[in-house]
Length: 372
Image (tube, rainbow, N blue to C red; front, side):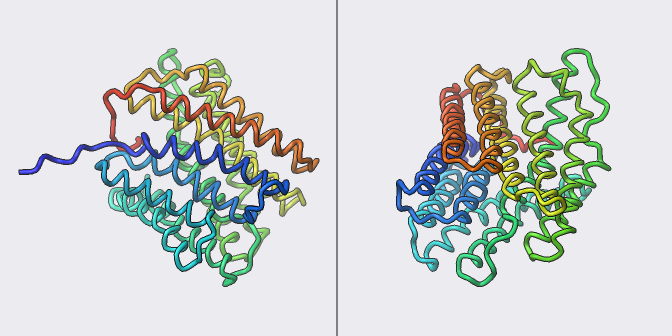
């Protein structure tokens, strides 16, 4: 009889790959914008790679927790092939199937189990949400091939923001409650189902509007609902009590950026604000901070280490917050200097995240599905 294949978690490979890719992609994009490199990357391609490239690699590392080493290798190689095919400018007949391979694999490995086990509805939302990344990939390619009009709100970014809203709304209060409990404080307001339903409904309206191009005011109202939901929930998690615990405070800061990003996205239509303000607050502030914090936090948990952040992790989050502020400033005061500074802080933050991830000792790995 053959011995069973060793079970491992994809975080060990996908997390450092995601952070390293993000560290390289932004300065290359800025070099292309500044005319230093003739890469020919469009803004749509840049947005795609920051969401369905970088962010989806982080999602895979978080969700794919019980795989054989062979399957982890397949997941990583399918993700890498998608990046190389798209950025290398391969013909669509080659790049399209390579690009869709990783989102499809992620849905089969991580999305379908949520559909099978989420009968109560508590976690059922995650299955369709992960599957929706396939739709986002299809919409991107339809736009690239001229089958649908380009422009509008980036569906991939809104899907990531929705995933952060819902999954963060489960993980962050659980972590917060544990930290407060160790100090003898009870957190009564945790998931907050009514506010969660309001946020999910708002995000769904915004996604529907973005995907179809219909009813922009309704989509903007949905984005405002999602933002208000996030900020109201965060206020009830007692964030001021945990400012000296960076492993929790960083999650709160990322969720704060998420709420502000959703509001700015809604007000772009309702109040005439620049659309890029909301998009970059979601992409740099919320995604950047939460992805780095969650990659480090879950790595510490799965390698059976104390969850307290090492100093480099706290610095990485602070650098990402500075990148978000600078990138937001560049929306209102366009300047290559501001863009370069934001890109530098982003890249330094990602490189520090990679260093923290790769210097953790590999001890006993906890390969259980993330708890809600």
